[in-house]
Length: 482
Image (cartoon, rainbow, N blue to C red; front, side, top):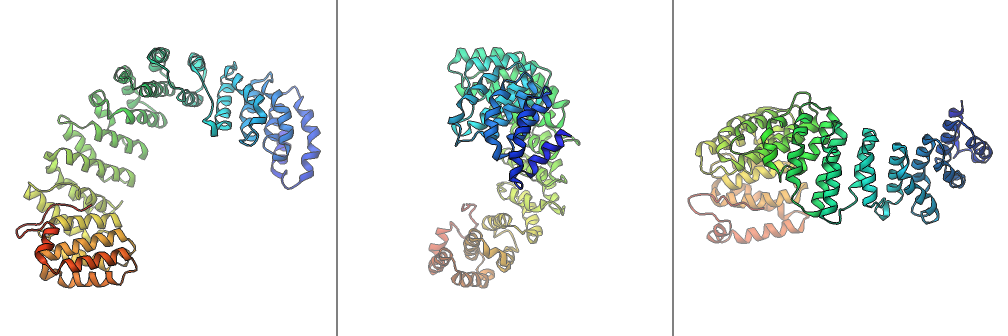
């Protein structure tokens, strides 16, 4: 019944002003109740009603010293509701008390005090800690529940070891936590240890990674979704620098059916970093498998990762046939993603692969809808306009799309590619170029009008124009304008 009354008071206090005044005596009386649940309820209520903040400031010092850890925890958390930048100087005693409560016997109270200090002192950089507090918290870390461990480690990250000796003392104190069976304690301890090392730029991180690798393997194989996501966050940061350690168990980063979208995306990013000449085929097959994932984010990341890998390892161009065949799949804008990926791959040197790719581009050009994909299509035309038979019609389709005119970057690129293609295929492009120049002269964008005028003047001297666009009489330049 008491809980219902206080809930009513909190909800309707703004509508019934006199209600708060009438309730003050009852609140003071209830605060003396021997039941800690009642005392906690009083603190929680008065700190939720702005017009009772004066009463809150009166009772908070007592509540922070209450014999019940239940009340102390609530009071510590409630401090952040009533103390703001405007009154923080007037409540220095409460802030000092919160610092004292970092050494409270109850770990929940410790966590609430740290969180409150971080919020109250946010404009000044949050809670201030020193090496003594760090060692004290490390000595008690096993007492904290999993959901509190993250708060403690985030606070510890605020401190930077002053020298190598202090760093080694911290790492020694973390040693047993790095082997802890509790995933929350282990992952946060590993993240903290590696963070300390980075702050001093000491090259001890390889030793730490080697030490925790057995535990990482175990967590990658058997973990809940939340734990696995935390482990992957830690690994993702250090994979680029420590590939040699992680590549030994790269298959643990292959996606599982039960993995969530976020986890799959993280794994695909990590796999891209772990590729080498020994595992390139395995990882390429894994990436191709997820290019057609039903989830848009996963398929997009897989396509992006595969294109990154194929640029690094040209011998994988034989996989392009499979990659290109995925453009026939009609969901997740997959054809547009693949088109974007193909636009950054150098196709010169393998005439068969080039023919296959260009044929696919021609086949799927009409599926291009968004601005980025249209830009990629224009890049293909700029590079291989001579080989793509229907490239003039691709430009015409973009030109006839009214939405294209809403993007100045696309229009500027369209004009440049149109002029470039005209210099190679003048008979087919003459009318299209005329239409483009005419439209641009009517444009409200001054930059586009000047660009059209410049190209028109330049085209009066065709030999000079070809030199400007790096075009000779035998082939189209592969140079690309950014």
